[in-house]
Every structure is written in C-alpha cells, then in structure tokens.
Length: 184
Image 1 (cartoon, helix red, strand yellow):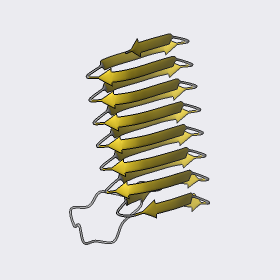
Image 2: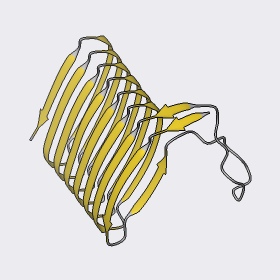
Image 3: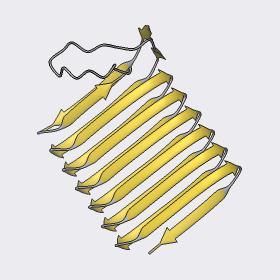
C-alpha cells in the first residue's frame, strides 16, 4: 500500500458533516473493527470544502492520484457524494439553498464536472467513465433533476435548468459528442 500527500482543507460553520475516504477500505462485517486498507496506490489527491449553515454533508472517496474535489455548501441539508477513481479528475460543486443533492462519480483520467445548484430540492446524478469528458450542470429553482452519464473520450454536456420541476437526462457513449440542454 502506498498513500502519500493526500490533502483535505475544511472550513465549517455551524453543524456541517464531512466524511472523507482517501483510500479504499476493505469491507468488514465487524463495524467496531479497525479500518483495513487494500493495497492501493493513492497520492496527491485534494479535497477542499467550505460549509456554512446547518446539516450540510459531504462524503468523498478518492482512489488514484491527483484527483481534486472542491465543494462549497451554503444553507441547510445540502448533500454531496463524490467518488473519484483514476487520475487527474476534477469535481467542482457549489450548493446554495435547502436540500439540494449531488451524486458524482468519475472513473478514468482528466474528466471534469462543474456542478452548481441554487434553490430547493434540486438533484444532480453524474457519472463519467473514460477520459477528457466534461460536464457542466447548473440548476436554479425548485425540484429540478439532471442525470448525466458519459462513457468514452472527450464528450461534453451542458445543462442549464431554471425554474421548477425540470428534468433532463443525457447519456453519451463514444467519442467527441456534444449535448446542450436549456430548460427555463
């Protein structure tokens, strides 16, 4: 096992929740047992989190090297789950409001997500597998849903949702595909 130079920067005010796993634990049925770690190469990963408000939560797992998660949460009961497996993946997530949810997963290398939520009960599910995929999702309003799945190389998606109750789903397989969704 080689783990070195993983960095977490954390700023919280009032009741925030932060869980970080910078290498993969081996699952155990004994919840009171000491954590066990698999033989995994993990180095130079970065988590930068700013939380302001009540009961905002971030759960992150990074495996590989040079993965970066930058997250900002303002408001109450916002939730981010981020999983990065590979190298040089980037997730930037910004939440302002109440009960917004992000679930973001990256496999591969040089993938990027820019995720912004402002409002109440907006939800983003995003998966990238491959390399050089780019997703930008912006939600403002109430009860919007965006689902993005990118499998391949150099795909790009942009989703903008403003208002109430919008739903968008984009799935890309292959290379060099572009999708743009605007909902007002």
